[in-house]
Image (tube, rainbow, N blue to C red; front, top):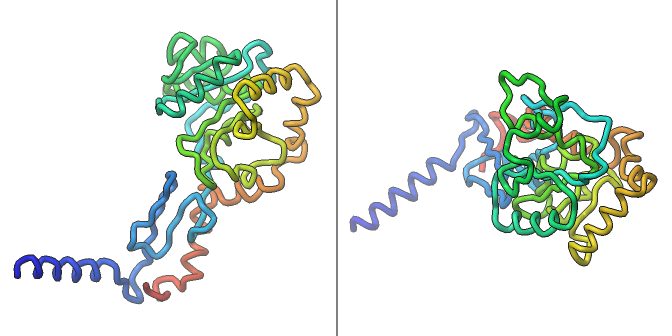
Length: 265
């Protein structure tokens, strides 16, 4: 009897939590992490995926707040690849180590660091100093990134539409991303702007391609041709759906549902 009573009370409580009456505020839940999951009680669900109620991409200015994003007009011709990661996930580290062992590179983060410590960005590139009184070591890394022809960008989870700031930082820095991540990444970026590492038969083949591209000014310039046209193609939509515009787009979604007087579940 006691068990049945607990079950009945739990069901009643769940119904109370889930039901929203007309006139109550709409409930909004956001999950931008890979493997997005609804809370189960929201009226509007925000995620990185276009199939959900409101989409929010990682492109845009909000992810740049508080960082020195000076872009260098010069590229390092000897050390080709920039890499920085401070969340040392085993699978990502293994992939990065294998590829970077084949290419001249600098690694500035906590993972696979080969520059002598976390504070070396300013030693390498004094123009990235910015406001050193308030900035942390990681605030200089995106400026440092702009000094390299290529930036290795590996998502922590490789799933559809999960394209994070790792890729957009590289594009905005004026470098060519070497990308491992979302299989539909071309839905989010300008044409011929990135190197999709998954399209090569081996990491050796990829490394050979990167080296040959670095030594071919015309072929390398083709990866930047889109910049002469400004934001274009799928990249227009990607930036338009960023966190920068989320408040207004959320208001539109609330309006479509009828606001407080909209339909309940």
